[in-house]
Image (cartoon, rainbow, N blue to C red):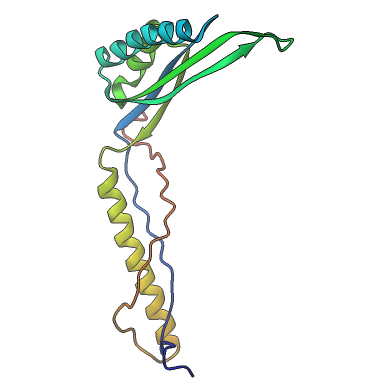
Length: 178
């Protein structure tokens, strides 16, 4: 046996999950504009998006961030170039109660693409840390079972690595779904 090879080592994985009721909704709203020149498509898009952003803010949207900005040539069905398409999308965060108002405001202001709402939790980082703690507790329990089955005991942790696939699952509040 090589002296560099650790002896009496148990390697385990742990899983941690935390349930939480979402308290925030994200809505993406955008404008697609077409024009014969790139400059006109961009200018028209910028003017239209300013209205959408103002409407999202007025409806209670916060943390408004740009999601997509693009400019592409457009063609006729026959493949003949006929101008440009500018696309701009922003994402805004709302309370769940105000999400519908945000969607309506964006559409009324001229948004011709709206996605969402996507539900999340404002305390996502703290929830993630709780899930990590649960994963370590789960891994420790696995290690204790394996070591016990081999008539050994668990010593100090030598190494921990994180390979997570954090997924936010929406859990309905039963009181609010009546």
